[in-house]
Length: 154
Image (cartoon, rainbow, N blue to C red; front, side, top):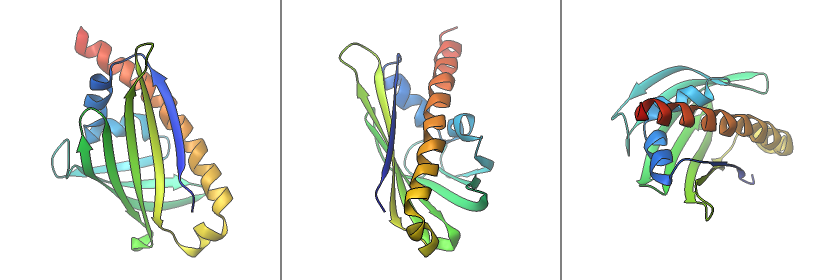
């Protein structure tokens, strides 16, 4: 299946954006509209940070394990996602780039490595559902990042 990429521009620096995204527990704040029941393991940040969540999308619920497998400050974070009893495997990649006008562009790409037959047969629907959910994630990320940086500065 083709990957899905969404992006948002934020006023924070790449270092601020990366610092926020690097902490696995922060992800709950901007994804809890479809990822619930967060349980954490491993380190709080960086490679090995892990969460197991319940994903509710497209009328179905499934348990997903999310583990950070690569981290290159302040540019990139790669997560491995496993769900559907291992039949669905994917990578979620955050790319963080400075904007010439100031601020940062944060992109998130969801790339299927392995997908159940139903996902493949309904590929366009699955991709559209993921794109919609992740557009919401990006808007919520921008809000939470602003709150986080404001709180840290006070």
